[in-house]
Every structure is written in structure tokens, then in C-alpha cells.
Image (tube, rainbow, N blue to C red; front, side):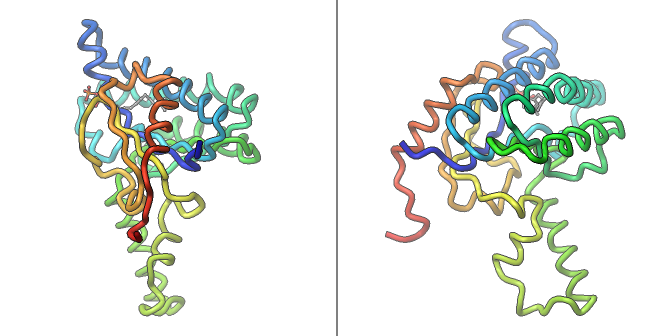
Length: 232
Ligand code: FPP
């Protein structure tokens, strides 16, 4: 069996999971955080080197302020609670997205755990926070433009490698496998550049119901695919 080096996940269906149970939406997010914990553990067990989860998109600010605020509180709790486990399981935490727009306390908690886990080598858990593929490309183009304007970069030197080297994901391989839960068939502005040749598995399961066996099933499905990267 081929183990994907990088698995990316669009975690969808937290709200529906809560609604089906007559619970507040945040209860779905709380159970969703539990799924993040289980799936991270499964990645360590299987030898997946990078796991990127879409935790908050730049469009999620449009949600009611109470839900947005509750998500940041949940994230802070998650970081505080999980850091010892990340250390025990040799997991490195990283983030992608415009972090400077997050609440100050969240930024600080994230920075501390990112620094603390920086030397861990089993799996890198990447939280996409205030992330979208388009803003990532905007930020990369701004950086490239500034380098050209400063005379440090020739326009003709801009190629695919140079663009990739200016994305938030510059130190990571592109995802091999993208999983989306809750049956939706959309990319929702996630890793637009990086998903060019990624195999996509969509499952009907809602994210809070997604566990280790579901990850293993998605990897088994990935193993049935023939990746040609545009060749024959
Ligand atoms: C999508 O479900 C989920 C989100 C926008 C938030 C994801 C957050 C978590 C899984 C919990 C926090 C994460 C960490 C890393 C601690 P939805 O709310 O769009 O569900 P719906 O489509 O059923 O309404």
C-alpha cells in the first residue's frame, strides 16, 4: 500500500451533525475538533508526513459573530489541551493563512505551540486558519511584485517553482490526497495551486463522524487510483 505523503482535508458538516441532534452548531465544531485529534493520530500511525486541515476560511468571517468567536475559543482550548499529546506523538504544528487577523490570544497560543513542536518529525499538522487559495496567491503575487520592483527578481525568472516558493506552503509537498466530508463536491477556495494533481475522495460522512477507519478507507481508495500527472 502507498501511504500518501500529504493528506489535505476539507472538514465539512459540523453544523448538520449538530442540527441532526438538536444541538447548537458549536457542539458540532467541538466534536469536529475530536475528529482532528483522531485523524492526526491515525496519520502518525500510518506514516502520513503532512496533514492539512481547513479549519477557518477567509469567507468564514461572514458567519454570525458568536459562532466565529466560539471557534477561536475552541481553537485555543484545542491548542492548550493537545500540545502535550503533540509532543508525545512527535507531531509538529504549523499554520497557513493570514494569521495576523486572528485574535491576539489565538496567535500567541499558536506561535508557542508551533515553536515548541518545531523539532518534531513524525507528522506535521497544518492548520489552515483565515486561509483561502486566492488570498494566498494574492500574497504571493505581492511578494513577487515587490522583489521585481526592488530589482532583486527578473520578470522572466518567474516560473511555477518561483510561485510555489512564495506560497504559505513553500516548505511542504503538494497534497497527494484531498478528502472532503459531507458529500459536497467543491474545492471552496482550498489550496487552489497545490491541488493541481491531487486525488480527491469525497465521503458522505459528516466531519464529526469521521474517524481513523474513515481515513484508512480514503487511503485505500487513493491506492486504487492511477496517477499520471498529465502523462500516459
Ligand atoms: C465546516 O462545517 C467546518 C468549519 C467551518 C470549521 C471547522 C472547525 C473544526 C473542525 C473545529 C475546530 C478545529 C480545530 C483544528 C480545533 P460547517 O459548519 O460548514 O457545517 P455545515 O455545512 O453542516 O453547516
